[in-house]
Length: 106
Image 1: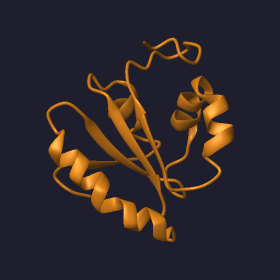
Image 2: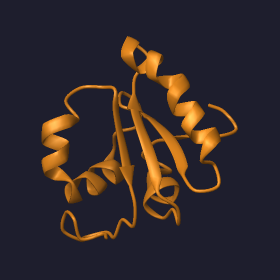
Image 3: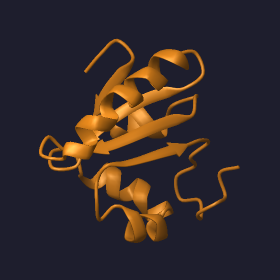
């Protein structure tokens, strides 16, 4: 990745995203996705510009979608059903509480 963007997968999703004290921008992507490759420099730029206030991570949808991600998406199941069918997808999350209903993290 880079100095500003971290790669997450099922093994480190909980510690890298759910336990973050800062808001997290998750870039769902895949290597075959040309729009993802076009978006990558913008994601990198945001990560660098807001490094002190925002954690930016990338999750390869072919390699990193496991049980930790699915537990997270259980909170946002409607969002998942409506949008995760295609990449690129970028989510900005803040104050995630496990087991909380959607919208309860504010």
